[in-house]
Image (cartoon, rainbow, N blue to C red):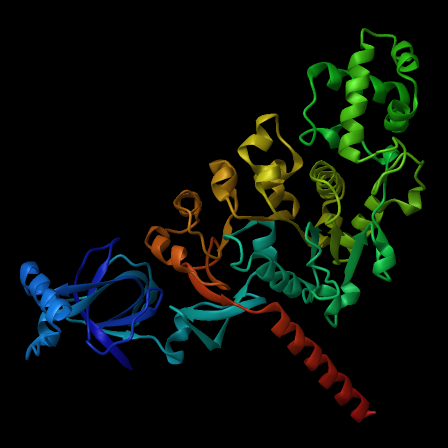
Length: 519
């Protein structure tokens, strides 16, 4: 065992205080084991301090002599007088003949403290199915213990991924989606604003995975990606509700949309865009003013990026053919447990929100109706995750100020319908507390901002107040995972996606070689 110190204080629910050995190597985040009578306390280092029994004024004098005169002070009792103290939180207690119990007691004075090794990993339940990284002890990754997440439960209860730029948010997302590809009854819809999930010339993505047949890619750039599906949405596939929460309409404009929908049905948008204003005003036979119609048309065309008012990059006023509908293709892919990636990298912000909202709404409505109309069929449907970046754009306080949208509805009740969110953001403090609290798994990859740390800590499903310092210091790929489905916050070093992609491809080659050899 790696003895690092003895217990010298503490209280239940707060810190255990440990006097450290002079030669011990201890980092914030290290997981420890304290032997005390019949109990083994498993804990985590949350802070390390330096202390001295020498009065402070003498410490200042000694430091001054070293600095100004270069004197070396050879103190015979240096290790006794100058030492380090660690603070730790208790995670679990193993009680002899009982098993694991909640941390409701503290160890005795002078109990020995050791850093855990591979023989102690059994205290961490690891019955998940989706591997995401190695257990991390401080800055050291333990490649003998792989942390796995429970895919289905995590999906429907929502995931929040938070970190500042460069800490590995997208890498985690690709690692997690790669795990979902291995699952027989899980699906995901990924809105990709940076063209990094599917992969491009210099970016490794899911198209490079040996199970890429499970991936369906929608993009406006089909010529660049053979086998991809064209990202085209026809105007007659959109309802007025698709624009709510995306475009700021006046009450008069909302009334005009409703009147147009009653007048022209599925062709309401094409009618609005392609018909003369005076004719529309007459046909509605109401008090809708020409100015209102003109303003409504302008806002709708802007959201759809219809520069020539007929054809845009994604949206078109051409009439759809039912069996070619993108929405139907997405629903069919979800039913078959596929990963759907929607390339929004060359699309404007308003248009991107319109696309993501329209697709997500149809998935949510499909699941909701299936549960109401055919419960047996609903039980067979895969759990589906909707992943999107820059979460405050659709879940932020400003975005929701004008009313609810489909993302908020899923956050509040999606778990009842097997649809969950994976929201990625650098600024969780912009999301309302009620929404943050619905995200029952949080992947925290490093947040220097105090406001963002506070927002995540206060909404976490477990007490991570003591982890604030560690969260601030997390390096790229280092994470703390707090979840309703883990016993305590898990320190993890997330896999590098490119590395596990190479391993998956090598494993597939070995399997093919073995099969050929058998033949």
